[in-house]
Length: 73
Image (cartoon, rainbow, N blue to C red):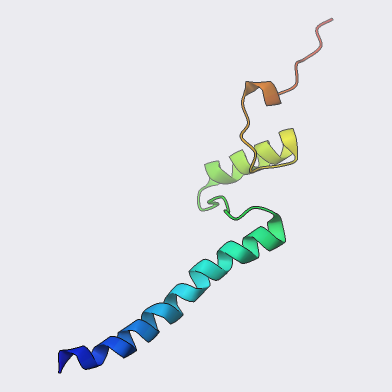
């Protein structure tokens, strides 16, 4: 019958979802944050480098207060 496929479908679905949830824990363990930033486009890489340069933490929300003031002579 049609329900005989259910155990196999559950096993396949479970095995395919393991890497997705494992990466959450591995990222939390390795980089201290459970989410990675998307680096597919050049603009995203530039913004990552900018945030890292300004605050040494690219995952922290940065506003204008994160940019140091320039000294005027």
